Length: 168
Image 1 (cartoon, rainbow, N blue to C red):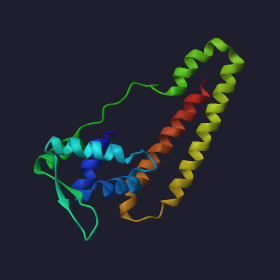
Image 2 (cartoon, rainbow, N blue to C red; image 1 turned 135 degrees about the vertical axis):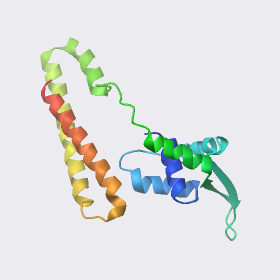
Image 3 (spheres, rainbow, N blue to C red; image 1 turned 90 degrees about the horizontal axis):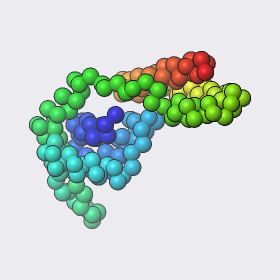
């Protein structure tokens, strides 16, 4: 996922300052992606430079001036293009485990078996955590639909990874 477009999407919903962008990102995507404040401001600067958002300074009371960002018409067009663009699929097995497996083969069958069993255990733990997460958001309203979808997709990916590990 491109952080750039996630930030642009959040700003398209309502004008926001950097901390509000980070908070909205964390609320909506925090279980799946990490975003630190430095990244937020780097992305906001880039989006503004590209003319996809505009920033204006705002002062509330005695607080320091903060920059509020709003999406531009060009930004809405760019976001729409990105939303309609099919996802580029990565090459299969671009996963750290399979790279480690490649080098572990030299260490013998027992070592590879131990390594694979540990990966299976970890994958099962992750899957259990995702299942718990899915139960917690099961009965949440419309606003959580995307989060439910993300969680279900993550469960399916974990189940596929577990199935692939069984063949090791």
